[in-house]
Image (cartoon, rainbow, N blue to C red; front, top):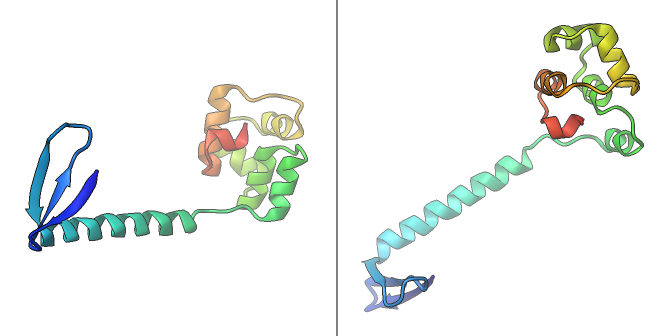
Length: 124
């Protein structure tokens, strides 16, 4: 897309994908649109900055191969009993998953992720 001034009061926006097509809009309207897009980009950037980040020590535990379920559970301050109840699984099953003795089914992994407020990808 190319933008250029036309007589100082309006701008021409040429769409390169459509040969010869152009639109003339008032300069004020384009400037308002640009400001709105910049504001939206700023908000998106701010939301990304406010995203939740794991402390380095927890990331190191993940890299070392420790159970992501255990790491997120401890980080959230949730007991095994509470997580098992919330996810609808037995405490012994959760213990086996956290110790690496058992792989969770897809359904169980989704329940654990939801209970821990993380994505499925973060715990499998």
